[in-house]
Image: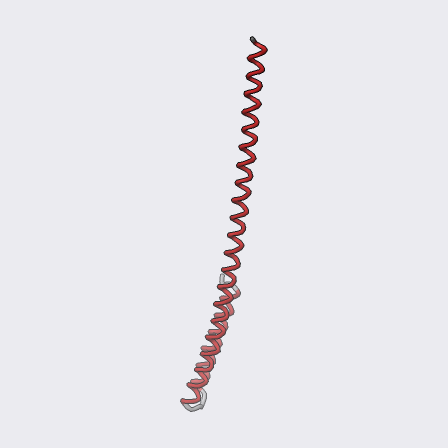
Length: 107
């Protein structure tokens, strides 16, 4: 499925092609027709350039968002690992204390 940006580009291209054919079949001099075609080409190139820049801006923004999301997930992962290490250390320490207490009570 074509995106709305693609549809706009296809629409503009179709319009320019249709206009070019109409101009070629119109009763104008060659110089006038070439000038009109050149003007249309310049206008189309400008529109296409704008669409390309819009696409680049969109991609840059989405890239920034993805990088921020990944950095946030990495930070959350680090915090989870640190929390788990602390819990594990506390459990080991509690086990060691319980073992020593048990040994003292058996002796």
